[in-house]
Length: 298
Length: 308
Image 1 (cartoon, each protein chain N blue to C red):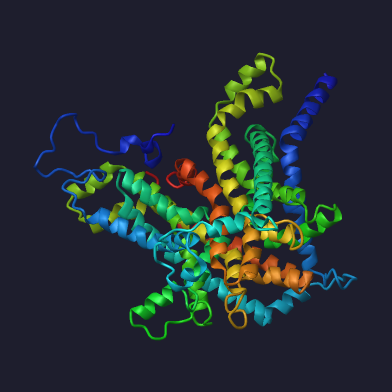
Image 2 (image 1 turned 180 degrees about the horizontal axis):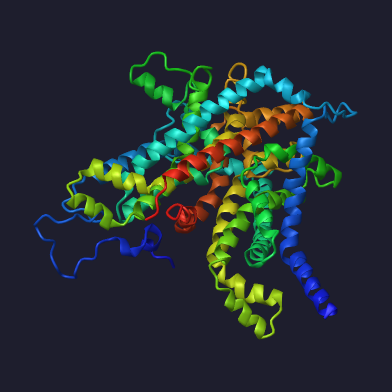
């Protein structure tokens, strides 16, 4: 009896070790432990080139509250996130409504919109850097159209952040199109027909039927776009390197890496990273909660 | 093979129309999918918008086949006559940047997704079938991993890799990829395994199969759609990864295609022809992959969208 119990227990341990263990072990080593170490670093003055590491309590966090570079990065990230959440969502819905028909043509066009999603952000960044260059195709076209002094899309501090937002929106648009299309096509035709029988025009049918039933698609798009926007690093690194000027396009994700690997201020960078993580978690939790409330079950 | 209508939506959505019955001229609820009397407006607008959207890629593409001076002078013109000089220049670079980067990317992506599939499928199976009370906690901890930006963990990861002498090695990058992307894999697999009746496994156990045999011979073959999703998405993500190889492989040794392109923009400066050719060649594998599997892409992406 006792032996049987032990054997069953051993079996369960063996099951865990062979099936659950390896995956969890790698996850623990490369995500869980580093997160905790990061938190630990954030309470120290860690700098690999300037040991010894000392415990400094909340000093780093206090420093960040008045740190211009950090506060600027918060502002930059917020603006970028707003652009990236709103633009692809709105345009994506419009394009999904346009493409909500059957046939090879619409399938092919859907793929066109999705294409930038599978391109590397480095490739997308270089293409757009070239396009928006002061002497690049966009400005050449503007000059040809009679605009004498087209703006320096990426070199003018007043424009760079918005140009970056536009580039990101272009790349992420396809995701929204595909998700909204799937949402539209899962709406039972009978519902729309019933609304039409009741005399509802296209606008009312959209607003009272489709838009409500697209709630899950809106939730997914908004949360995914928000998390992606918060993590934006590649495009900033390749296109603007945080400039032009003092950090006009330096997102939090960009600032963390610069502080960590260029300034070697590991403690401060970890504090920035912890705040970044907290903001992402809080913002997506709030967004999820608000948006889920709109969702209705059929 | 997957039929298009399976992907685009459930086939039951359109109103069935009796075969042979002509559409009645009376007020008749229009079928959204086959609009009656549809003018050419929608397809024309749709093509126009898509063409506008595609313009940046068109410019990039034509410049691959254009000599350098024309790229700055007339960037949007068609390349007549087209030249392969840019592509040949990239393929025959003396430092083999393209070939080395390509080999590294294939190795890193291939090994990462192979290991990820095995570990995520087994862990997913464990979480889906285990009745232990820890399972929920473990699942929650993994769920958090989906949200963690690499920035929040890279500094300690670099220290761990330095301590184990895996820093600036492909093995180190692969290990990190496995740890970082495993939550995604586990969620795809766990969700899918829950839909497979456990009786199948019980029957196999009655027949005397052990756990490994049950998993690899009975369960895993049934997971093909989930495996496809995991391979496709993680494959594209890891192939396109920029930050992780940039930090872990470091500036001195080895590049993947993305960090290779990044490094080349500094060197070439004005030689855009080579840059565009390099980007084209680096994107080609993922492009072919996408065009061949686009239906699975869409299916994988939208699995959750309609269910919520």
